[in-house]
Image (cartoon, rainbow, N blue to C red; front, side, top):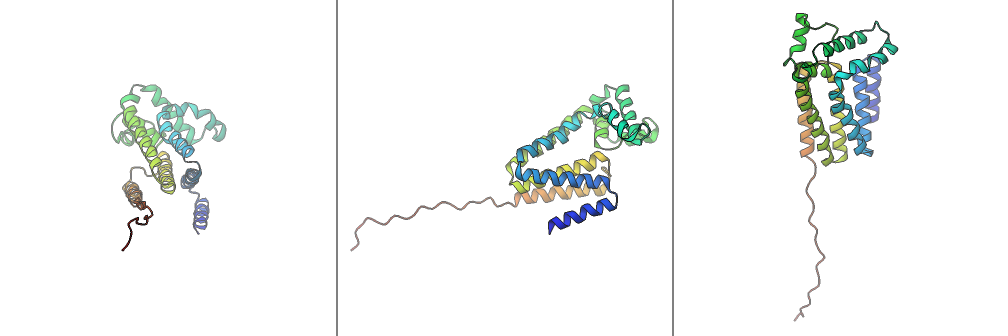
Length: 219
């Protein structure tokens, strides 16, 4: 039944051309199944795809520009976003350490301080607003979450990692990452996962020894 639900969901996303949602669902399913059979590999790949990607994000405008130009051409909007991000990194390299402050990226765009074509999403905004200090804190949070799954049952650990990957993809894509409904859904998801973790069966039946027949003579 659940396979039919997943197939229907994927088909619906394809028909609606919801590219970000389709990528998030596909990666989450891949991480879920990989965690069930190869949990150590799944944790390593998730760690590399979240914490490591956030740490090297300022290099992405320079690393991805040749590939993006080859795939989409030089006039694509993605190329404009990468160029704008690269110019900001080269213009203010010291700001990569301290950032500019909370919620500055949207205001800077509105005020004309940064180009309107600058990218949206977690990777750009956390480096521009919080700098390396905020990025390091977020990476440590990812590491703690992923390490925590080592102590969970396989299915629950798979749910944790799949949810993390799905939320990370949406945040990187900039899909309403600061809107109230999105933050509310993340809060409800965390409450649900924590409730599942605390609701696992942890008690053990005490081991009993077989009773030995009494050696006392009976009258």
